[in-house]
Length: 267
Ligand SMILES: NC(=O)c1ccc[n+]([C@@H]2O[C@H](COP(=O)([O-])OP(=O)(O)OC[C@H]3O[C@@H](n4cnc5c(N)ncnc54)[C@H](OP(=O)(O)O)[C@@H]3O)[C@@H](O)[C@H]2O)c1
Image (cartoon, rainbow, N blue to C red; front, side):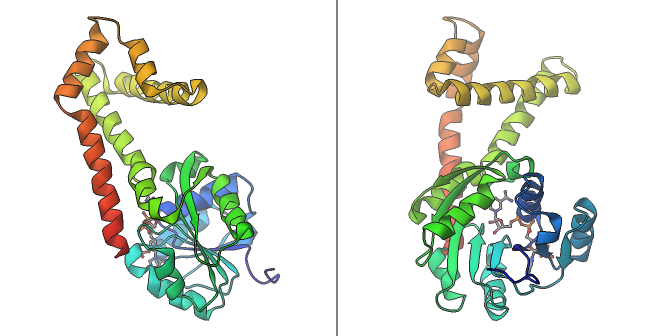
């Protein structure tokens, strides 16, 4: 149990992902602002976080805490963990891409608990998607604790650790693929004569509606696509062009590149 002087959670790294998780956890009521401390070396970012979340404590170096959410870049993570071991951290939920539980554990004193997760930035609005996997000494309670944090900011899937690189390639980096598609579709609407505002409205509505159809009907995307594709119609003409341009293969190659990059980061 944390002492009254220790936060319920120490968030180490208040950058893009750390901020998204922080905002999501506070919005979901997982913790009150007074129960979370953020450790972040960049003073401008500390000021932004303090202004965005009145009541949280923002510090420039890690303080004593039992439980840590680690959201720093992979190249500094092991050094940060060595410092966290010294200040007495017992349990770490790491969202650091690529770094294995074995490497994270090796940077901490023996017996400390590590759980790895790969979330994505829609966590900012409570719509994140995360893969989760326990390290060598994480027990069921530790996995439940980590799942509780990520549940507060979206949905969680438990996977064996060897599949976390694949999770990184599909959903960790995934929002960027969707945003790229959105950019392209908005540009296409403008090219076809729509104002940028109208085109954006149409594209965002289409993405949201299509995602909800996938979720709420549970149908295979192939069947949902077939339902929009009348024989000899406009969608058939568009899909033929997308297939000619190898869009399906581009997605498969893009995810494979992200998976490989995640593996490289972990070496
Ligand atoms: N962004 C995503 O979509 C995403 C998705 C899944 C997982 N992740 C993982 O999340 C982690 C963070 O990524 P990010 O995109 O949020 O990067 P980011 O925006 O650069 O955030 C990292 C933050 O950690 C801070 N930091 C550096 N050294 C520190 C230390 N010793 N103690 C405390 N904080 C420190 C950095 O401050 P300075 O800027 O001053 O160095 C920065 O604000 C990465 O490991 C990444 O693999 C990210």
